[in-house]
Length: 581
View 1 (cartoon, rainbow, N blue to C red):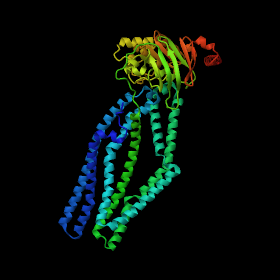
View 2 (view 1 turned 90 degrees about the vertical axis):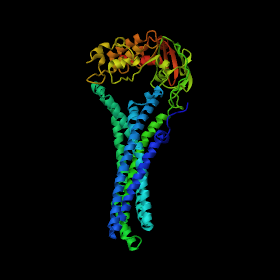
View 3 (view 1 turned 135 degrees about the horizontal axis):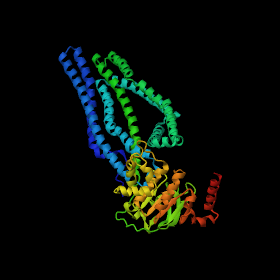
View 4 (view 1 turned 120 degrees about the vertical axis):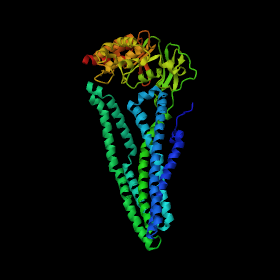
């Protein structure tokens, strides 16, 4: 299916191209009306010298009207472009969140919440610069210098060429100076933007979890990432200030309107001496020479703002370019049965497989544990069952039906996921549990909480089930949060349950409670457990040892400890650690 989302700026702004054209025309007319002012003042001065007061007054009025018209058109152009941009940004956010909803679930496991929030909020806001200012101010800033040059050439091409030659020599010197600085290693704009984004992501994540960080005294480890991001941003900023800013400052100093006016004054006196221009015409060259550098400096500033907007635009277009998760137009009906991995190969990057030709069966209504070293492919296997990503080769099947042939609703409504990365909404405890079943009654919610062994803790909260998590001292430990997510799984009552290191963030007391809740949750269900602590899965019906992207060993606990292989070594290692403690 063809990607309906835009792939470049032209396609992105296509729905508002007429409105943008109107704003550009208004901005150009505003710039042209401003150019009327120095011409009218020059002619008025000529009439004044010749003592023609009526002509003087007429052109003074024309100059005044030009100023009023310029301000009116400029203000209306900005007002209209902001109205257009506000409506555009609203639609952009709607379309962008629609795109996010169609991405594979795996995208959200590899992209931080801070990065996603920045995409939806900050990056779409930065595009404001392109829409509300970019087109209009760019058009105005291009029109003004071109108009200045044309008018000066009309009044006297010789005087104009000398002024422009000196002006552009200064400009070229500034550009060469900037390029020299860039070649010395100071062109760090991209690094600066990247460091700024990393710091923003880290800040959002720290702020989101500040209450838990303070409450459980884990600030040292969680602030380390933030500190690194700040240090990197500071280093890049210092590098930029010591290099590129010097070049910008140099250009700014030689492009001062006062310097341009002085050059124009000297050249104009020389032109009067050579009878190229009259005394009154000196005014047009003085006024336009002041406007020329101002316009070019504005153009450079707009370019810098557009560069910032382009970074955000690229981030958004990169998301639009990602392939949607595709579902069959006429999906097959889900028939529960064994889960089968059939010749499955998968990699987050095409040339780097995480799973390589996996073949196994996870029996219906049995407990299967996935164990093995970190990075071996356990979590990837479990998440492929819920179709977080699509396999590059082979298929994952439920009841002999490829999960790609199932509807999204049938697939996800048959699976409960409990991960070590706990995610609770900033809403009431009831609403957090009811995510699994939005129309659930309060009685059903409380029954699920009791089965998850979290009901008693909830009843201790200020407003019990109506307590807002994260507000007014309502702080849950990692283990307690995990039991809230397990309560969701109880409420959903799905036939398939996937548990990924469900006790990883729990203390000893919470771990016992979680294990009890999981034992109850797994009755008469197909359960897949990813476990680090082997003691927690000794009663599993099947254990798969996953390493280097393949299944190394399989069997029950008793069978595997007799094989003197990877599992037996892991078992002995963990028992030895326990004895040392």
